[in-house]
Amino acid sequence: MRVSGSVDFLSARTPSGRDLARRSRRHGSLKIEKDLGDTTVGGELLSYSKRYDRDTSPLVLGGYTIVNVDLTHRFNAEWRLVARVDNLFDKAYQTAATYNTGPMTVFVGARWSPTF
Image (cartoon, rainbow, N blue to C red; front, side, top):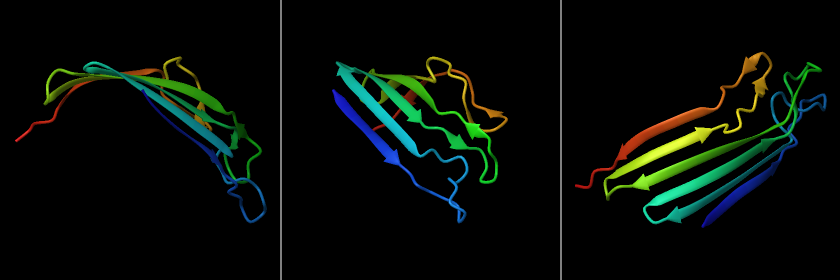
């Protein structure tokens, strides 16, 4: 099993002392992956604190936490099946006022890495 993560504390301010626009003071991430034979499963938790939409605006964008999951299955040395679900619980959030983020998204594909 592999576990990685980070926690960031930011104090980016304007000359007047206000937080810079669209920058969370706190951000954290946690990623866990587990190999199960030829298959790797993983999960990722991303969390952001509230932040101002603009340097001069009182509008506060709420903090949010999202969960992503992924799976990779190795068929042989060259071919892999890859699948990913972003925003697993379909969390509604905004990184900028009036610009909604996408809903839960599912990606499925094949990866070919030829060996020469």
